[in-house]
Image (cartoon, rainbow, N blue to C red; front, side, top):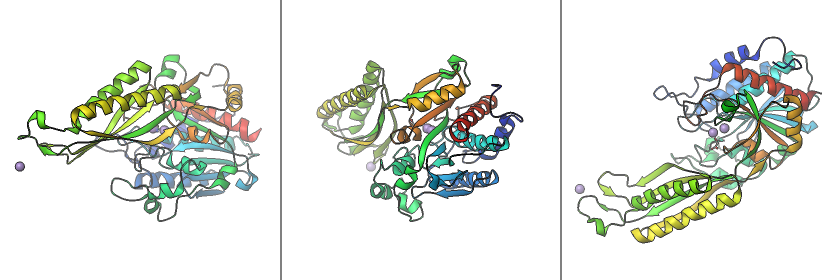
Length: 411
Ligand code: HGY
Ligand code: MN
Ligand code: MN
Ligand code: MN
């Protein structure tokens, strides 16, 4: 532990272990061990209650949800003072995801605030721990929904009309309250720091417990609609078929190949088939492409290559292709000044690394000085129950986040 760390005394990992034991079981599926924590659902509501209780017990003077489902616990000077330092992340998960992606950042932020207060520190700027709503977009299909609404990156009317797979709209899920960007909240924010489990093996390979993010790859989601002719699986000759599953399968292979050619990443992890019957040639196959690349030009070229290949194949198969961009997250370079401050606080030995994972920090970065801290993930696996983090590394993350918060909001 650094001798000049603000966090002396009882190691946060005892506190970390206690907090983690309280929240880890919430939303975990007994069968798979994966997490089912979607925006505005019961598991997330339970975590938000835990958040409120913990924050108030640690001296938060206000805990309130903005008009977008984002939950803020405020400490120190009133938010109206402005120039607040935000720390936090998200509670929601992908279906059957890991336990750390999101919640680790919120638990660590709450514990970092606690450690500073137990060390007798006074905040000279407002500090808020934030839980952003629906970061994974698993329920309403738009990633970073809460932070996009907060920053005005998503039109509130479009958002309110988003519907989940059960036909429930965001407005209904939010209890009828209209979603809406709250620019005044944004105006009060002077910096945002997100601690997150690393979704990869860089820190493992470097032998480092924590790291700092240099930036986020540009990435996006595209919906692919392949339409053909429904028909009987048994009586329709192969030469008479207009089978969209064929065009879809070819497109998945093409996306994989085009990504490899460019050192980019392409994934099709979600598909819907109509009528989805074993003995019926599909009428429609709908797939979602998640594409990411180190720069915008490569990303554009990848998606265009996939579109061309899919359209050529559709012509051959007698099917049609629809391609709709559902979300785009531009390339992010985190704030040099803030990262320099982190470098001063954390010391030269802390690695600085890019990530191809999207985060609320990537959305806030377009509006306020923003930085990210990563905590080592021994498996490197994420969006899976295999995601993991050691208690000591998590405690180190809390300690370093407390040091950063001390630098930004106390000194
Ligand atoms: O999809 C992502 O990159 C993030 O985990 N939401
Ligand atoms: Mn995630
Ligand atoms: Mn995440
Ligand atoms: Mn029949």
